[in-house]
Amino acid sequence: MIIMDLIWLIAIFILSGILTSLFKSIFTRLGGNLYTPIRGGTPRAVGIAPFIVLLLFFPPPGNYLIALIGIFAFLDDIIGRKKIKGMPFEFGQLSRGIGMLLVMVIGYAYFGPASILIALMIQPMNIADMQPGTSASTVIIMGLLMAILLYLTTGNPYSPALILLAVCLGYAPLDYQGKIMMGEVGNHSFGVGLGVTYTLLAGNIANFHNWGSGGVFIVVLILLIFTALLIALLRQKNLKNFLETNLQIPNPGYGDLVMDVLTGGGLGDLLRRIILRKRTITIKNRFLIVLGMRRLFYNPHAV
Image (tube, rainbow, N blue to C red):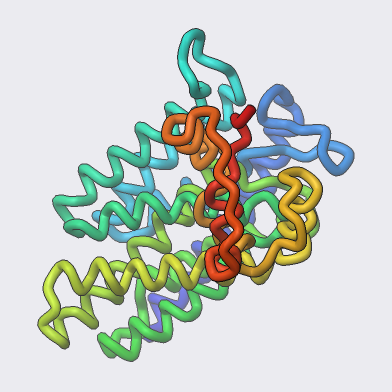
């Protein structure tokens, strides 16, 4: 890595830290949906700081997709959980859904079918952000892994994965302390950023083996699932307590935790409401229980 690349990474790290502190102060004063009483008062959506830095320094076309999802995710943070009259979803869910759809459609021109998975990376990162520091840890661990693998497959030590790392390391200290919350704008932006780096690595591997776009899709899918496995491990105690206490799933296994990472949250429950309506599906098969099917088919709208 040349000296200028290292200087840029340090500058990115510093800028991310400065903007994080700045938005923490601004959102604390603004209040409203950007400030929550959790943990004695915590500013939300401070992930707008890394979003801005990624917008400036993450290479195109990745930053185009980050811009799309970040804007719609920030609208979700600002609006909050407001119902749309006569509709089964909230304004925030609609905003995020539009953002994800745009990432898939516009991203297709650059990344092919893998753009679908890039957009879906939002889901596990959103679940990770429900516990202080987990999203940051996920980005740091997977970003470091991608940086190493991209170097091994290209010979170039400077990669978008290092930009993700620098941005996240500048943001993370206050998040680890529980003094700020990343919000949808932050975890969605990092999710898409990770998805793009996964696709770059998958492209290198697929080109070497002549696998084509199908091979790229499979490699990215494997990395997405690995990310979900990691998040379930990082949030193991917290998720297990949530599934037992809130969803009444007795003795949840690791499969249930992973399935919650992949399908939990507002968007997952919205799909369950549309598909299952008010039906209850009871899973008794041991193998399916191990796979986490109890969580997958848990319907909060059942009667």
